Image (cartoon, rainbow, N blue to C red; front, side, top):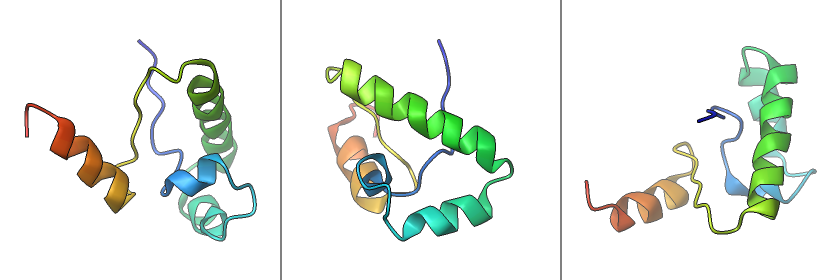
Length: 73
């Protein structure tokens, strides 16, 4: 299992290359080059495997939707 983490704050980053939050994620990244690599992996995963559900825990709406679906929360 591959882990891809801390690549984005808002889901909009997966679809909008010009979203203003990109500046924040770039500034906050420990290694922005690695972050961008991870972001591209996530975009590819979403495109090639729509059956896989992903969520970003920084995105309040995504996290809320994900945890409300979970049987563990």
